Amino acid sequence: MTTSVEAAAPRTYQVRTYGCQMNAHDSERIGGLLDAAGYVQVGDAGEPDVVIFNTCAVRENADNRLYGNLGHLRPAKVRNPDMQIAVGGCLAQKDRGEIVRRAPWVDVVFGTHNIGSLPVLLERARHNAGAEIEILESLEVFPSTLPTRRESTYAGWVSISVGCNNTCTFCIVPALRGKEKDRRPGDVLAEVEALVKEGVLEVTLLGQNVNSYGVEFGDKQAFGKLLRACGEIEGLERVRFTSPHPKDFTDDVIEAMASTPNVCHQLHMPLQSGSDDVLRSMKRSYRAEKYLGIIDRVRAAMPDAAISTDIIVGFPGETEEDFQQTLEVVRKARFVTAFTFQYSVRPGTPAATMPDQVPREVVQERYERLLALVEHVAWEENKNLVGTVQEVLVAVEGRKDQRTGRLTGRSRDGRLVHFAVTDEQASRIRPGDIVTTEITYAAPHHLNADLELLTHRRTRAGDAFEAGAVTRTPGVNLGLPTIGPRPAAPAETDACAVR
Image (tube, rainbow, N blue to C red):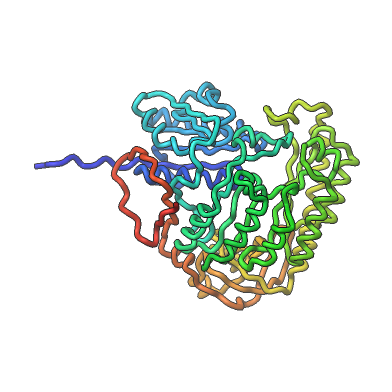
């Protein structure tokens, strides 16, 4: 005779992420929250019980992409009314109730300031059989206090701040993410140490403007101090950060980068335009001369520094002369890569209503010229590394290409390296391991190394990947509801508290 009712199977979920590293890291928080609430993550196959879209409002056609994907999910929702669809992130913060009006089959809409509410909102929507919309105007709790399911066993993102105090006329981020909020240094370092304890070798410090870190607690040199403190963490081999703003970039940060052994000689610093007139119109509070001066000082301290950037083409009022000034800065700066964007109107930004919008065909033609120059310069810079020995952190995408016999990883300066291995080596080298190899060929976007490997070092990160471990940082228990059976307590190597 049955004496107990068998527990229902846990509900499954899938997170689909669009946009920047901040969004990708927020998705790790969403995964951690749902794991803690008893949901189970599934891959791309099949139809999960819950689909969460973590959206971006910065990229062109972001809204079309979202509503198109929501439309594709509608038949699945009709087949399975118990399926739930949630929309979060920047576009949710901007569009709010418009999402449910255009896609009434959406169950939950949540903003950038209340990620921690998602499990409660999902349960409330199920109970009330109706859509739940919750958009806060300011940060409810710093995201890093939330549990996290990390997507990598060897590299991790660590938020040091959220929000932005700048007023760039093309950018909607301050309106959607709010004013800058800084974490205390001890909290940041505790999270870094927790990740290293799990086997992580590399961390990237994240913020909308990382080098203004400390503005909330009145320490203008806080970011340089944080970099130096990361250098004291045993087992942490690589430290990166993104993205700094040129107006806040100080010589103290350059000295910290140069003198702290585990801080990578890599700098991603957005330029946006090489024209002082356009920069003024963008409300970017620096000029081309200052930008190039920072690069000169970085290279004087670190001659091997790899510098990348962001550039917008066709900002309102941009003339051919303005565009030529951008090309000249690209020639002088010698970027190893540049993320190039065609300006497009973003409703809600001052630039959207500016006069002298540049015709699309002109923007396209300038974009193609810029892209050609960027690739030419990047190729020349990459050729300088042919014959050098590089330390490569093997990446997840480093599965052996059967046609070329290569694995893939990242050098210390962030460049993509495809390196040759034998079948026997391929069976032993795991994502998270470290190899050294000599560069034999350069392309604009990658390097090849086709000689015999010089060294291979197995790491704790590689061990964790091989074991199928999931790196977690549980954060603070917010009293969230649990759905289905609770997962078993993770082993000591799979979790550690962050305070």
